[in-house]
Length: 140
Image (cartoon, rainbow, N blue to C red; front, side, top):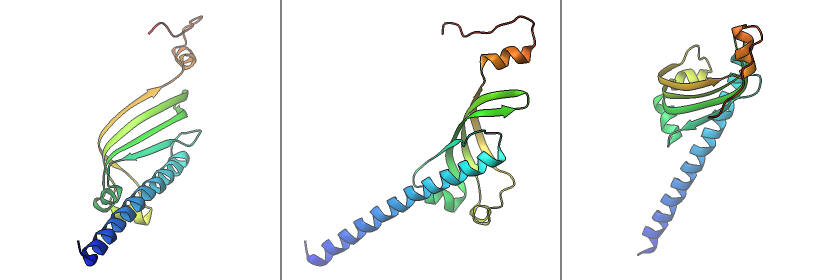
């Protein structure tokens, strides 16, 4: 193999590795920014955890459609329910690059949401208001 071809291959490899590193750093920054936004705008008592799935991330940003975003958090308050936890997958999230760049997002279109909200037994007993009722976890 001649020297010029080897130099081109090495340069190409460096570009690919650099692009992969930039892609993963961008995901981490976006996850942190999303968690910060939700901790202020949603009823999370603690910062939620956001995982943006899909590779490469930067093409999702460019096209404004994210394949799968996972959100989980504890100590939520939904109306009269306190101390709830949330685990949700948002699939097919539409967020145009222009809205993202301007940081002006008033709504988020999602193709499919699959999630679970869990709340403590004590909250269930309190909300049912049945006198002398105690709720405890059973087997299984």
